[in-house]
Image (cartoon, rainbow, N blue to C red; front, side, top):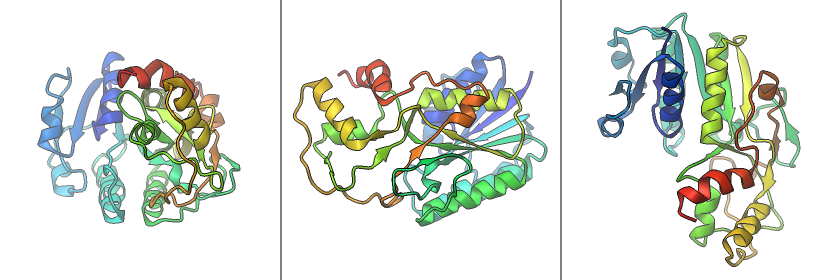
Length: 283
C-alpha cells in the first residue's frame, strides 16, 4: 500500500487526504498546531501537529513516504512567514524525504501580468511583491529537485469565498477603471488535481496551473451575486490594492492540466456558487 504525507492538512489538505484514503492509500497528515490536529481527531488516518519550518521536528519523524504533498498555508502571512512555511518548509521536507515524489502548491500570484492577457505555464512568472517572490523561489527549489509545482488560483468552496464574503459584508466595489479578472478554483478541484498528479506519477519538474475554465471580471461576479440573491448591486468606486497581488490582472489557462486528464467538477464561478458555495452559506 503506497504511503502519502499531507504536510498542511487544512482546508485543501484534509480534502486531499480524504481522497487518497478513499483511494486505498496509507495517509498521514501534519498540521501546524495541536489545536488544528485535535479538530481532525475523527479522521480515519493520523493527523499530528508538526511545524515544517522546524528541521529538527521533521527529522525526528521515523516514517517514510512514497508521496509528499506540501499544501501548508501561512493563513495570509507576511514575506517572512512565507519564507518559513514555503521555502524553508519545502527544503526541510525535500532533504528529509529524498527520493519521494514531491508536490508543492504554489499560487498564480507569481504571474505579474496586469493587462488582462491569457497566461500559461510558459508565460513569464515575475511576481511584483515579496510574498510572490518567495513563492517563486520555493518553486525553483522544488523543480530543481524534480518536484511538481501546482499554481493554484484563488480557492473557494464550502464556507469559503472571498468575493461572496465581500459582497455580503458590503465591502464589494465595482471599479470600472480597474475591473480585474478573478481566477478561481474550487477546493475539491484542487484536491482532484493533486490526486491525479500524484497517483499517476507524472513527469517530474513540471508546473501546472490549477484554475477553473472561466476567468471572470470582478464586476460580473458581484452583479451575478446581486441578481442571484436579489440584493442591490455594489457601489461604483475605486477598489483597494491587494497587498500580495497589487494591480495584477490576467486570465490563467488550465490547458496543460486538462491535457493530462483533469476535468474540473466546478468549471465556472456560477457552477461553484450554485452547486456548492451558496448552499453551504445557507443562501
